[in-house]
Image 1 (cartoon, rainbow, N blue to C red):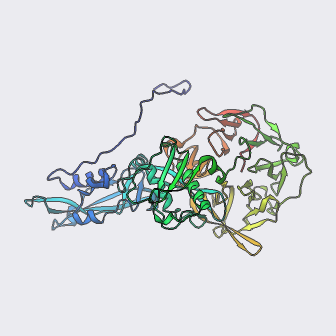
Image 2 (image 1 turned 90 degrees about the horizontal axis):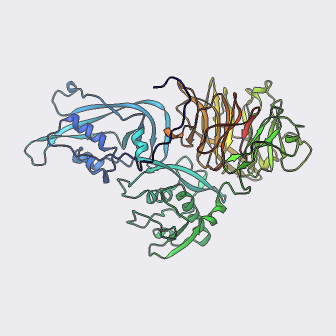
Image 3 (image 1 turned 120 degrees about the vertical axis):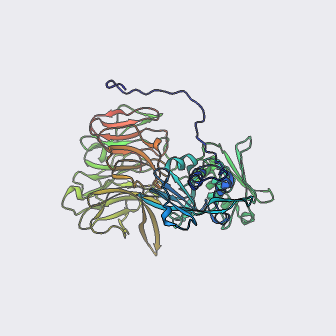
Length: 588
């Protein structure tokens, strides 16, 4: 290994599909108990239809009752199989093999990934002797085993992939992403290809965590027509989806919204190009058609501006814009109009609304939150939220805009930590109901999703700051709107501390943090807490904040203590933009 010189990128040859596949092998005749257990654990990682080969390692009763589609337990590595304790069964009626590992997540029957901090996993597999098929001897088979599948993380990511289902925000006309995991190839249980699995998962309804905040336009009980296991586009890139009788009576507008849910959902499948969806009755008659262009009206992020642009604060607290050209940014930042650009209201943090017409900024004292136009000149406006905390570090967090045009900010005051929502950025502030925000806990930073249904929170408790995803719920009581953030779930349980977070798509975040015993890293995470080795971005020293666009067309922008404002365009490395600057943000 060389011990000096620069690190250089090497482009390898494209060797085609390198996807590893495991083929299950049936138990050999007179296999000993160790082989039976090891063979079954290996067979669980295969694509064997119906897990038929895996079931050959089980007794007839266990084969009937084992439900591999019920759940998946994900461990850091493949489960460790320990030796059976023969002394525990002196009558030689069977042997119990302990299984152990570090559990990092489960996937439930609705395909939802649920992460947790690595915890000890202990289960067992019990084998017994039963008469062989020819009745002349005995053979070892498993009669008791853990429920569902038990997979190491590498096997899980080899067999499953994340896709977004889409449902409508409750009472609204835009969709919300709901990430789930489906099989990479044909599902062993349903025999469905990935497209059909994805459609089936959408029809089953939202995951348990999201269902109270979204609506599905598909009537209850809607399923694919019986016997459908494969869906493919025609030469016009139209996908025809036959449904059961539950969908026969839907009206035109409801059908359009159903088709929109399908188009957004299938848009995440890179293996298929769907330009149009046709929903069909069981008879094959058409219910409705919808193209991608028509479905765009239901997007959470509407294309009100041609291209998202990143913004930042210069060394004087003035707001500057970096215009995006293609996948790069202009070298020279532009000053925005209004008091934030002229410097009459110097800022410590900022957020730009989704239409890039207004900005909200926290003043230099950290006490006041102001809102101003960034397209026209205007006089400074009164603060919309004020903190009473004594120390600047305990005052207001950086603000965030949701897709509705509402403005969010956290007051970090130890005496009264709370969240505020300012309707339309100009109304009377609404204190957000946060039953989990107890004494000793506060929100260091927040970012609201474009759909306004989910919120990413950096929650500090003691000395530890963790990344949590909360669900935003709104309830109208007369003229009053009660807003709550509930259902907090960890999004980066393996990270010891998180420094910065930004939305990077419908269900993806870009995060700066450290794993236990590790160094600072920047990586992509799904909102359900799942990740992969390929999600780590190139290293960058001393990152204090990071921001990403809603799509992949513009660069990721960060603030590095050594290099100032830097950008990462797709397929390149970090490049300096401005030597002195802070608080880089994309709209939102």
